[in-house]
Length: 541
Image 1 (tube, rainbow, N blue to C red):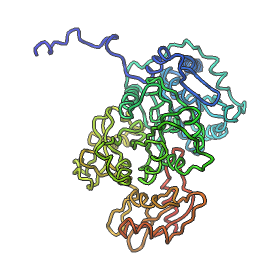
Image 2: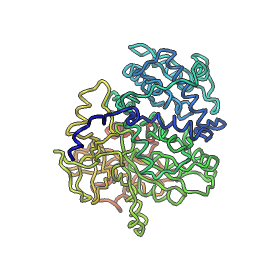
Image 3: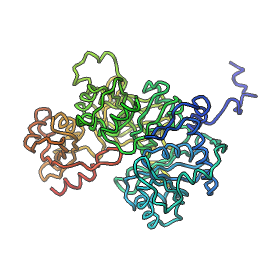
């Protein structure tokens, strides 16, 4: 063993150490998958060779307008080819990619422009007026705006700013990419939803994104040349890092500007889509699609779902339609999904409803994570008994660098050597995690804790329910009681008495809603129900 103590001549060299970055995937694909389809959007068909050259042009054009390594370049784009190109083109010039939610209000966009100090922003023509209004509210220097029209969708240029294609034409297709010297360098800046104040800027590094692109194919058992429908917005955890992953597999990204049941079925039937990711609301769209929206297809479609715990009833229904759904879990701060529900063949013989309940679990850590577990208030491991509740915490390479310009929040999030999710969960024997609730969503009624997720799961079994959300309603006697907001399927009918009686067949009396409100539920662009808006309504009843 003595020779191992002598490290003379065994240091890092160009030949044996390269900083990890997802940029490497596209450089490789441009050579070995040159003629394969990389990006598809209607009539637009980009081979990997053409994709690489367009990305190079973008990186070059950005440097020509003064973007330097470490600068921020923002986008306000739906899932169109330009958004995929920016995923590689912005970091290829050493800059940091800031994909902004297209459904944010003008004031929040102005804040993000200021806080992130964006030098350039690529903006879809539909959202250009919003971006220009945001600039008027800014306190700091405004970003250079590049307009990105989408003629494929009938969203034409307003011709107020430089056109994206004209901007690309100023770039060099042979531009030498600025690869990171250190894999800890910042790759992307993503803002949280900001439901309790100003959104926080989550900073990703190249290493974490690269390892996400290597861990996901293992967990999802991904094949070469898969065809992926880009439903998850690229402004949400950079599309769970899937766009950065696709070149490693020689896969094809099928862009999707507007999500609908017909768009999903058409992509599967016409573009042979094999995989996609999406929130439970997307699963509901598919399950509840009208007959004229459905299209026949002859292959199994693999689906990652995350964003909120899916109802077992939804999972059971979609499984009969040709979709195999795997539940995953993560946060903006963890680059997207970092746990998965790995199926055990011993469960194949269980009743259908029990199988669906297991599939709704958030599961165990992805291979690129060091540890994901559930702890008590003192950071002690909770019993893995499927009953004791604690907080989900995680540590590993797919955890953010921290919150931009917010050291206090960063320190709080990383206390005890783990990232704190603030999600409450139980842990089953074998380590599988199952979310009970967000800490702020637990309803405490007469001293008893009620999981809103459990109540929602019961309501989703009702045949008339399309979506539902349960929040706390102030109550003079009990402190808080469950209040359910229900969105019915088209043409369906139900009343409050019926809904409450239905839940009583499945839950203890104190867990049942005391009030049921029928309305369309407010949602984020990624399909999450905005419970903070519903809490406001519940307080007024």
